[in-house]
Length: 47
Image 1 (cartoon, rainbow, N blue to C red):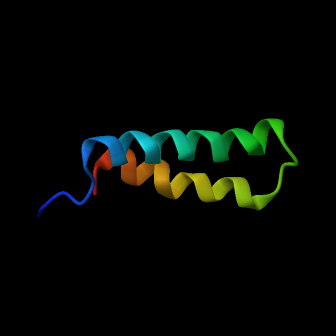
Image 2 (image 1 turned 30 degrees about the vertical axis):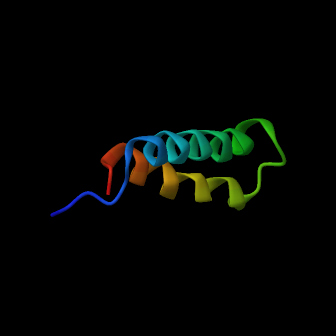
């Protein structure tokens, strides 16, 4: 299976995922912050 995420794209996805998950803890605590799981996992798995 070929990887779909490059080096810079992987870092950006991880950062966006962490920021969105951080909104759940610090921000308005809505379900939208949990959307950060998707870019975080795709960045960590590189797929």
